[in-house]
Image (cartoon, rainbow, N blue to C red; front, side, top):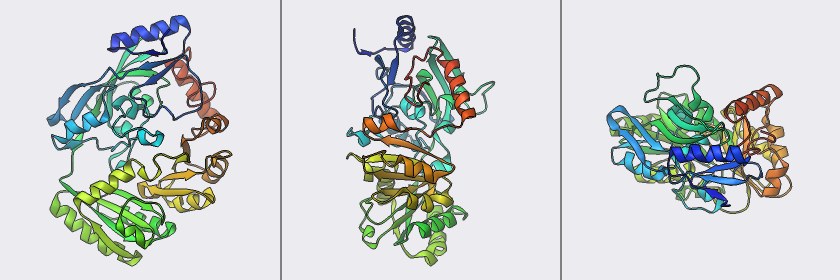
Amino acid sequence: MTDTLKPRDGKDVEAAVQWALAEGKTLEIIGQGSKRGIGRAAQWDLSLDVSDLSGVTLYEPEELILSAKAGTPISEIETLLGANNQELAFEPADYGPFFGGALGRGTIGGTLAANLSGPRRIKAGAARDHFLGVTAVSGRGETFKSGGRVVKNVTGYDLCKVLAGSWGTLAVMTNVTVKVLPRAETEQTVLVLGLDDAAAIRAMSAAMNSPNDVSGAAHCPAGVSVSLQAEAAGGLTLLRLEGVAPSVAHRRRALENLLKPFGEIAVLEEAASRDVWRVIRNVMPFTGGARALWRISIAPSRGAEIAAAIGKGAEYFFDWAGGLIWAALPPTGDGGAASIRAALHGGHATLIRAPAAIRAAVPVFEPQEPGLAALTRRVKESFDPKGLFGPGRMYAGV
């Protein structure tokens, strides 16, 4: 028996799922495997590799829609969109380098299954907000479709929203449709130098509450490198402006005047701005290595407080104007789980990278209240009553 099933199309996926049901086998769903190390340290009988389900099946630039098979690499889609001055506005991160892999191996299906959203989430929304339609195979071995080609055509249950963030535990996506948007003509990034965490949160809040249409707001404390000479000054607070050149120039001047009371100001022009936000988007300060890596989502006003409570030995930086904290901690004990979860009191934390022993001992995804846990089980049973897909990956017994 092979350890991997590799279907060639949607019919093959359906047949593979039906076979696994008949044989009582559990399946791990993978594309290129760039996010394979995320989740509880569970075991499955076989891998269902959908990487051969690759290719764009529909692209209508004028209608701002794109459909692709689930195993299509994000890099291929971004190249196609870039040739038409368009983009995936939710700016998905590439998690492959976290585990020693190369950039560009993530797939569109995996991106949506993990609901990956980068720095522009504060303006454009999450991946699920751009997920219009899907064809998938449920744990009953049945192919189903949901959504379509426009935002307002959903009737009944919007299953795209349910599948986004399910990490391959509900169904096997075979084809997806997403909304795309025009790419900004240019961009610039305003830097504020030397701020501590609390001051940076205040500066980012002032920028986000201004009429300057900021599309990225991040803060790197001293010692966390995003490869800029300005880092020598200490903490680095970054605020991105995108759009047509005259608008960007006008908003940059307004933002500089707004932020002058906080500290020294500098500006990154287009090329340098794109480079630094690529570093932030792909969390490159923490790629490779063995440190436990956490993704913490919290109210922006509490960002500095949570960072201070994580404990000594942690490295971290802020995205989403302080609402997202990436934190790297020593891979010993519980990997910082107790201190992080004790500090939250709202929000949620996901353990993205850690040794298997830690992932087996602590909750990888945010623990759920009893009512929400019961709802999660009912949703799982509706899509996958036999527990075929990734059982235990997100929560024990689910």
